[in-house]
Structures are given as C-alpha cells and as structure tokens.
Amino acid sequence: MYYASGNYEAFHNAQKCADADRKSAYIIGSGLAGLSSAAFLVRDAQLPGKNVHILERDPIPGGACDGLKRAHTGYVIRGGREMENHFECLWDLFRSVPSLEEQGSSVLDEYYRLNKRDPNYSLMRATVDRGEDAHTDGKFTLSDKAALSLTKLFLTPNEELYDKKITDVLDPEFFESNFWLYWRTMFAFEPWHSALEMKLYVQRFIHHIGGLPDFSALKFTKYNQYESLIQPLEKYLESKGVQFHYGIEVENVLFDIDKKSGKKVAKRIVAKREGKEDNIDLTEDDLVFITNGSCVDSSVLGDNDNAPVVTVKSGEGDSWDMWKKIAAQDPSFGHPEKFCGDIAASSWESATVTTFDDRIPKYLEKICKRDPFSGKVVTGGIVTVKDSAWLMSYTFNRQPHFKAQKPNELVGWIYALNIDVPGDYIKKPMKECSGREICEEWLYHMGVPEDEIPTLASEAASTIPCMMPYITAFFMPRRKGDRPNVVPEGAVNFAFVGQFAETERDCIFTTEYSVRTGMEAVYTLMDVDRAVPEVWPSCFDIRALLDATNKMMDGKKIYDIELPFIAKIALKEAVKKTKGTVIEELLEQYKLI
Ligand SMILES: Cc1cc2nc3c(=O)[nH]c(=O)nc-3n(C[C@H](O)[C@H](O)[C@H](O)COP(=O)(O)OP(=O)(O)OC[C@H]3O[C@@H](n4cnc5c(N)ncnc54)[C@H](O)[C@@H]3O)c2cc1C
Image (cartoon, rainbow, N blue to C red; front, side, top):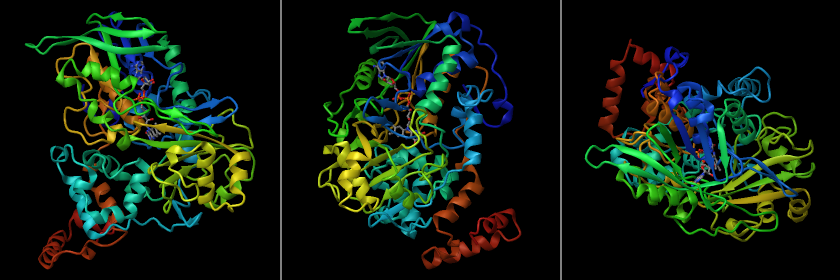
C-alpha cells in the first residue's frame, strides 16, 4: 500500500488482483468502514461479490450513519455529518456508487451539484439572551498568548502529545476565545480530550480555518446520511453480489500467532446468531476486516415522555467486548480500555426534533434568517446557544431531511456537551430529561414566550433523545499502540478498520476516516496496484498556512503581534529580507504585511 495525490493515480483503474477469485472476505460491522471495505474489495481488488460477507449484529447496515422513522414518535438521527471536499478516500468511493436520486449520476455528482447550487453558510452562528445574535461576527478573538500556544501545538511532534489533554498544552486564555467556542461545538471536543487529536484536527482542517466561523467550509448530503450515503452504497454492493448477514453477534476472532516469526493468522470468527453458536473457520485465503469499537455502542433512545436510560457501565458494550478479547491475544491489537474506560468523559446526548406545523418554524426562521421550508440550506450548520448551561447547539439541514417527511414537517437535531448540569428553563440535567423537556429548553433559548413553551413542545413537536455513552471515546488521550495499525505487523489475513484503527495523519470522528481505513486495509491485504489518496496535505501548503494565520489573527498584521522588543526587531529584519521575493508577495497576498 502506498500513498499519492494527483490525477495520475486517482484516474487509474486498478487491475484485478492475481488471487482475487481464490479469496473470501468476512467483514465484521456494516458501518461505513465495513461497507467501504466491501466496496474496495469488489471494485479495486475485484473479488467476486459473492465471496464478500458482511456480518452485522443490527437488522440494517450503516452503524453510526443512521436515519430512521419510529412508528408514532417521529424521526431519529443520532448525528448529522459535516463533510468537506477533501474527504479524498470517501469521494474516491462515492464517485463509483450510483445515486438513487439522479439517474445516470454518482453519489459524488449528486452531492457536488447540490452543494454548488445551494452552498452552505450560516447567518447566525451563535445566540445569547434567548435567540439574540451573539455577534461572534466571524471573529476568532484569540489573544496573542492563545494564538501562540495553538501555533506551538501545531508544530509539536506527535510523541510529545501522547496521553496529554488539551488543557495540558493550550494556554488558559485559549479557552476564552471564539475559536474554542466554534471548535468544541463543531467537533465536540472537551477540555480533557486528547491534545494529539486536537493537533491532528488543526493540521487536517487548516485549509478550512477561514470557513469555520460561518460554516462555509462545510458541505452536506441531500437527506440524512442513511438515505444519502448508506442506502446507495448498500444497493451498489448488492448489485455486485455482496452477501449481507444480519443478526450476527461476533464475540471474538481467534488468531494463530507465531511468536518467533511474528506471523499472525486469523483462524476463527467466534459468533452467535439468534443466541446460537455460528463460528466461521478461516484459512489464509479468508480475509477478516474487524471494526473494533464503535462510537454508538450502547446508545439508547428515549421518547417524548421518557429520558433514555444508560444501563451499561464504563467499558461494557458488544464492540468493546469483542475488541477486548481480540486485544488480549497480542500487544499489537491495541488497548480498548483507554477509550471505553470512562463513560462520564466520553458521553453526550443528542435529540431529534420533528415539528408538525408552522408554530415552531417561525421562531427558527428569525434565527436562521431563511425560510426553513424552501428546500435549501436552513441554519447552515449548528447554531450554538452561547449562554446555555448545557452548551446546547442545534441544526436544521435542508428539508425534507427524510424522503418520507410530510411537507409541513421539519426535522432538526439538538445536542449538548454539558449534560450533567441543570438547564436554564428546565432545571434538570439534560441526561435526565424526556424529549419534551429537551424541546422546552430549546424553545426557551429560541426566544419562544414562556407561556407558549409547554404547549408547543407537547403539541407542535415530537422529540426523541439519544444518549451515546461512547460518542467521543476516540477523543480520549492516547499514545502510539493504543489503536491497532490498520494492518498490524505480521498480519496475513486480517485488518482493523473504523475509528479505532491507526492510520497516519487523518483525524477521527469523520466519515472519511472510516472509509480511509477500509481502503488501506483492502489495498494492503490484496496488494492493490493503485495509490490510496494521501490525507489532503494543506498543512504543508504555505498558502493555506498564511491564510489560516491571517484569519486566526482576525486580520491583524504580523507586526501587530505582542512580542518582546528584541523579537519584534528580529521579526522586522526577517520581513525586510523577503523584499522582492515570492515570500514577500505571499505575505502581501495573505494580508500579513
Ligand atoms: C452523533 C454523530 C455525529 C457525527 N458527526 C460527524 C460529522 O459531522 N462528520 C463526519 O464526517 N462524521 C461524523 N460522524 C462520524 C461518522 O458517522 C462515523 O465515524 C462513522 O459513520 C463510523 O463508521 P464505522 O464503520 O467506523 O463505525 P460504526 O458506524 O460504529 O459501525 C460499526 C458497526 O459494527 C457493528 N458491530 C459492532 N460490534 C459488533 C459485533 N461484535 N458483532 C457484529 N457487529 C458489530 C455495529 O452494529 C455497527 O453497525 C458522526 C457520528 C455520530 C454518531
């Protein structure tokens, strides 16, 4: 497996792998990582589809990428996907997957045209005082000290960030900035999360810094991602003959490990179907793709009248149980307990609200400054309630968000990072609230008059809360070796895929990461003669860096930075030396001098 960027490799179609007809594949998990592994196996390695088996415990595919309608209560999305143009592996995949919306087009074509026609941007990023504009006004408000500590983090080698928290490396002033408000609410970072992941995120999305405050950096699918990504991919795989097996709980994978040579061979998948043993014995020609760990493991739904009740304790859950049994067999298979060991630090809650008439939308319209029923961008990304005790954010994407939605319905998504503290209207922690109570808190922060709130939450909407105890498990502080490499050293016929497999430079909690690990796994195990697209290298592009610097300084010039006298003189001298060079041109172009 090797990386490259550019058209030469991207437009090349891989040749059928020599032993493709002899191989079979067993893919544990039908999330994006598992589905994309299957797709790269049939498209690029050219395994016969009938030899590819997806083993999934749920009755439908998609894992975290969900979207479903519950009878009588309304729609549910545990999350919504903020996406971008440089999801290189994901777009490489979806250029081949036929759209279900536009005949003769790919999912990529459909997505591209939609986001060209109707670009995403927000007209109110944050509110205060019950629905008033918080006037973040596109500013990052980073003090010089805060900006310096962020720059230092950007330049710190990974090794120095092992097991460190964000608060260990960033200046206290950083946490007062709008940058942190935008960042943590957009990506769901908490101060105790991994400093290494924070750095990887800053590097990974450095080309989007200017588009963060108003979300012009983001792009969205037409409907929820189950209908817009998972269903077309499922149909594509079915058309290739890929075999889906639902209701299978994989408990373990057993390996033969030769301690001397380091050769590792997966020998058996230990599984249960409908409570009965259903093991699969493996040869070296049977490849196994293991989705180890899941951010939606043990997530629970409540309903309009009841709060969701989490029953698992830290570390419990099917995907963790399987990974723990696997990890016990070799040190290179990772340390699941680092990620699943503290639910209090890795959980938050979302809620899906369905509104039934125009009583609530009129308040939403005041905030998003658009007609929510127009079919076009509505809030343009999340709106954060800056002064909410729960640190609540909410978003309404283009409507309908579900194909089956009625014309008078809107489906939106609410989430909060501080779920353990009482709300501002509902004097209870979010995690103890029913859907209706969460809706009431939301309506309060949208500026709905207090006497209307209970009626609107009961009659004009239905709200389904969802607790996700492991939603940010992958953000827990970690070090090299905590996540197994996609293909561990010595592995003959197996790979790890998904958010808890280790790959270079990319950052987790993204659809791209799952697809990338699937692509790398297939290309390595099948020796596919085509490059995996490298992570978009903007952190090595001087133009992206200068642009980000200018934006993060809210347009200040480099001479305006507070520096000790000697450093200021040195800076002036250095800039003088660029006179007449391309560097001077760039500094001017990006408004730094
Ligand atoms: C609330 C939320 C918000 C998000 N926001 C964004 C965003 O803005 N942008 C973005 O790009 N991404 C976002 N994501 C992330 C993205 O959706 C996920 O990272 C991705 O879908 C994960 O796919 P996966 O296949 O790696 O894992 P999963 O989707 O977790 O799939 C794992 C699958 O394996 C199955 N499984 C697990 N254990 C077993 C077992 N023992 N036996 C059988 N089957 C098993 C599970 O049932 C599941 O189907 C978000 C996710 C959520 C939940």
